[in-house]
Image (tube, rainbow, N blue to C red; front, side, top):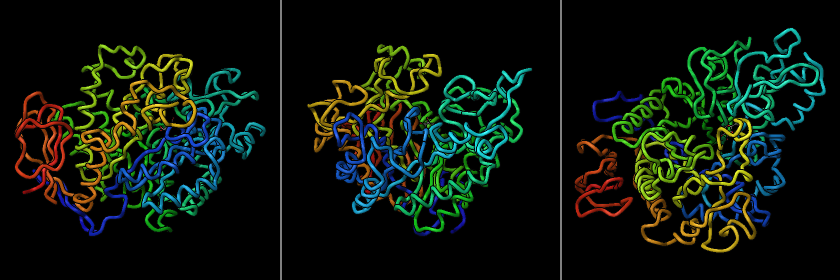
Amino acid sequence: MGEVLPRGPQSYFRPVIDSFPWWRNAVVYQVYVRSFADGNADGVGDIAGLISRLPYIASLGVDAIWINPWYVSPLLDGGYDVADYRDIHPMYGSLEEAKRLIDEAGAASIRVLVDLVPNHTSWDHAWFKAALDADPGSLERSRYHFLPGKGKHGQLPPNNWKSVFGGPAWTRVPDGEWYLHMFDVSQPDLNWDNPDVREEFIDILRFWLDLGVSGFRVDVAHALVKEADYPDATEDDTDSVLSTPTGEGHPLWDRPELHDVVREWRAVLDDYQEKMMVAEAWIPKWERLAKYVRPDEYHQAFDFHLLKASWNPEAVRATIEGSVAAATSVGSIPTWVLSNHDVIRHVTRYGLAPHVEERAWLLSGDEDRLDLDLGLRRARAATLLLLGLPGSVYLYQGEELGLHEVHDLPEGVIDDPVWERSGHAEKGRDGCRVPIPWKREGPSFGFGDNGSWLPQPEIWSELSVESQDGVEGSTLELYRAAIRIRAERLRDDESLEWIDVGPGALAFRRGSGVTCLINYGDQLVPRPEGVLLLASGPLQGDSVPANTAMWMADA
Ligand code: GLC
C-alpha cells in the first residue's frame, strides 16, 4: 500500500494502491428480496424470483448485489428480526436455493453480499426463548441486556433510553426484569461483552463465507456495544434510525469498544480471498466514521451525507470533499448512496418543495408540495454525479426505473413497526419497499403471477422494466449506459479534480479524462470541451440546462 497523498487545493486524491480490489470502485445493487420478484405467486418476492431475474441484474452491469435479510424471522421488522441466522425464511425459499443463487450469480460475474444483523436477534431466536425461560442472573440472560427496574418495585425502566422506533427501549418480563431493545420490542439487543455472542457471530460469518458469499452489509454497526453501567442518555434524540446521536461518550451509539469486535470479524474475512464488509453506520461526524474503515476494520462504511445534502452545489461539493477526505485519511474509499429500504426514495425527496420536513410530509402526503417531474430530472442528474465519482456506489432496486416513494399506501397495509410504535406519528418505510413493476400490464405488473404484498400505483405501468427496456432516453437505459461507461473508463481511476464552472453548477475531471458537470441552478451552463459521453436529459445546443448532468471525454 502506498501513502495517502495530501489534499491539494484542486486535486483531492489519487490512487493509493496499484491494483484495486473488486469492492473499491464497485457498483452494488441492493435487492429487497421481499419486493423484487415473486417466483411462486404468493404475492411476496423470493429467491426463485430473484434467480429468474439475474439476467436483468447482469444487464445493468453491476458488480454485486446486497440482499436484505432473508433469514428465518417473524418479520416484525421486515426480517431485521432474525430467528435463525443460518437458514432461509420458507417464504423466500431454502438454503439450497440460496446456494444456487450465489452460484448462478457468480457465474454471471455478480457477487453476493448478505445482511448481517448483529445488534439484536428476534424474540423468536432460540437464545432469547431460553433467556425468558431462565432465571435472572443466568448465563442465558447474560447474552442479552436484562436488568432490574428502578423504583420501589422495579416498576420503572432501568434508564431513560428510547427505542429508535418510538417508546422506551426497555420491556418488562413477567419475573420483573427488563430487557433492552433499541428497535422493536421483538428485537432484543445482544450483549457483545458475552463470549458466546462473539463466537456465535464468527461462526455465522464463516457459515456464509463458506457458502460462497463475497461479504456482508452490517446492520446498525454503530450500535453494537453499550456502556457497561447503563447510564441515562443526555443527548436523547434517538427518534429515528437516521438521526442517531454519536460522539465521544454516548452510552449507546458509536462506542469505542465496538471496534474490537470489528477487528475480530476482519481477521475472519482476511482468512478468505476478496471478501468485504460494509458498515451501516449513521455517523454525522466524518472523523468518527473514518474510524470504521481503518485498515483492520470495515472495508467500507455507508456515507449518508450526500443522501442528506440539499440540492445545491456548495452543499454537495462540501459533502464530496468531506467524504473523500475521511475515507482516504485511512486508506479507504468513499461510498455513495441516495436511496435504500429505510429512506424516502430520492425521486420524491428531490421533488419536494424546499424546507418540507420529509417525514411529516409523508404523513400528510400533500401533493401540492411535490413535483415528481422535477424530482426525476434531479434524480437522473444525481445518478451521473454518483456514478462519476471515485468510490463505490450503492443503488437501491427500482431507482434505475425512476420509481418514487408510494406515499399514499392505505393504513391497513402498513407493515413497518415504526407506525405502531410511534403512535401513528410516523408512517414508516413501506413506501420505498413497494414491489418492482416488471411488465406494463398484468397482476402486480409482472412482479409475480398474482398480487403484491404492497399495492403498486397504476402509473408504475409506464415505469416498468418492459416500458423502459431498450427505449432511448429512459431512466433504465441511462443507468445501463452510465454503469457501462464507468466500467470502461473509470474502474481503476481514483482521482478527482474540481473545475470552476461558475455559480450554480459543479464540475470535476477524472484522471482518465472524463469530466462530469451537474447544473443545480436555473441558468444554462456552457458545456465543457470534449466529446459528449452521456447526459441525464436533453441539452440545449452547447449548454447544459437546469437539473441536468453530463459526462464528457477529452477530445
Ligand atoms: C437498520 C436497517 C433497518 C432496520 C434497523 C434495525 O437500520 O436498515 O431496516 O429496521 O436497522 O435492524
